[in-house]
Structure formats: C-alpha cells, structure tokens
Length: 341
Image 1 (tube, rainbow, N blue to C red):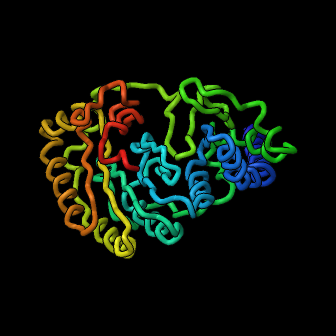
Image 2 (image 1 turned 90 degrees about the vertical axis):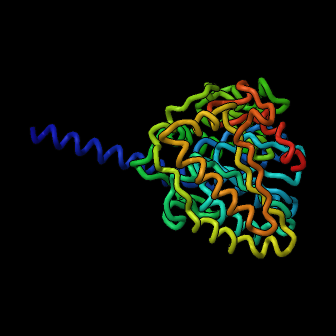
Image 3 (image 1 turned 180 degrees about the vertical axis):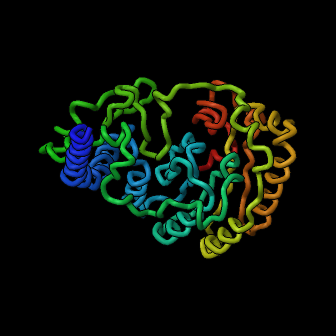
C-alpha cells in the first residue's frame, strides 16, 4: 500500500513538473506574443481570428493599437457579441460574463486612453445584472491589464491545453506568413478569411471579426423560448443603486467634454420577456427592478436608454438567435437606434 501511495505521489509530482515547464517555456512567452501576432494577421486580412480563452487580452490589445482611430466602443457581456458596424472607428469590446460594475471601470479607463472617443455603449445584461452584489466584490476583471502570466495547474481545460500547440507555433515559426499558412481558409458564411489557432471547431470560422463582433460559428443553435433558467430565480431580481453612483462619477468628465453615453438592453428571444413577466415567481420582482433601473438611468443627464429586450418589437425572428438570450447580428441590425454606430 505504501509503494502504491508513493507511486501516485511521484506521478503527480512528475506531471506537475511537466506542466510547470510547459508553463514557463511555452505558455508564458506564447501568451505574451499571441495578441500581437493575431492582431497583425487580422489587421492585414480583416479576417476572423479565434481567441480561445484569451478574448479580453486580445481585444484590449486591438483597441490599444487603434486608440487614435476609435470613436465608439461597445461594452457588455456575450449578449452583445452580435453588435457589428461598418464604421472603422467602431469596436465591440464586449467580453464573457461582464456585469455593469466592471464596465464602469473599463469605461473610465477607456475615456482616458482613447483621445477621440465620442460614444460609449453599455450593453446591460439584465438577467445577470440583478443577480450581482456590490460592484467592489463582483468585478474581478482588471481593466486593460493582461491576466496573470501562465496558468494555474488547477485551472487547465481543453482551450488552455490546446494553447500549448498554438504558443509553440508562435514561438517556432520564422515568419508570420509561415505561421498562418497552414490554417488560413475562406469562411463558410463570411466574406472573410478564418484562422484556427486551437483544436476547437476547425474550419468553422469561429471567433471575432475585426470590429470585435463574434461570428457565433460552431456553437450549437437552440433558438427557443426557454424559461427554465429563469424560473428558479424567484426573488433574486433586486436593484443595486451603488452601480449607478459609481457610474455617474466615472462618466461625468466624459459627458462634460461632449461624450455620448448609451445604455442598451439587448434583445432576447421573441416573447421571452413577456412570458417571464407573467410568471408569478419572476414577474413581481423582475418588472419593478427593470423599470426602476431604467428610470434611474434616464435621470442621468446626457444618457440615452435603448430598451430592445422585447425583440419582437423590432421584427427580430427566432432564427436570428443563438439561444434564448444571445441575438445574432441580423437582429441587432434591425434596432434603429444602433444603425448609426
């Protein structure tokens, strides 16, 4: 029994040493090089680049490279990944699971860093927003800073393991053309080139366009009126005024110099909001919380509110959705208030 336990212990020590070595020699240098090399390819081709677990550092790098050009930025969660624009001065900086408390800190930093920034669009995910606590505790994302170098051995997943190969290729190719030549291809449903860096969804053109919007390719589509995720919420929809207090302070100087602030409540599956509002364990908390939130936003001078949650009012149809809460670009294009972005 002792020998068996010792063997197991030595195996873990060996694997830990292997991962640590990969982390030091491959992942750390590759991680640092990834945004620059991927952006270089995308800026030349205007193609779709796959970012794996590195959406935030890649997008922030892209914004920093265009800091003198960008005039409009969208901040939000994956619910706003579908917002596109033909305007080269536009960038969709949305990232996964990004609550308003974090967006306020991002906006404050962007207003300082982008000299020609004129419009900030906050895409507020209501179904996440009313389940958060104090902004100081819910906002774990650091603004415009790369994640800690390397990865914890306890947080490895497929996309991070696959990054070993991508990082190795980045380090060991003599030129950008040689690095990308094996993986560049015409996108099936986009008038653009695609680029696969990870083993997920090869050839599907899954990733981000050069305006920061997502193709949502490869992800399984399940557009339906699915209420199961919302029924257990019951009384968890509450209003947090501290978010607005922080928001007002953060955006005061930006608005004073003529900056425009738009709060977008992004579209959900047609009929979903109406169905939720009728549920006895959701409607009594959701409807007042939403109305109070909108009223408080509209009371801030210089702020525009676009409530697009009831997507059926904008003629969005079920096939324009990935699932119950993620609209595709075709639906966002029907929202008139967004067409000038």
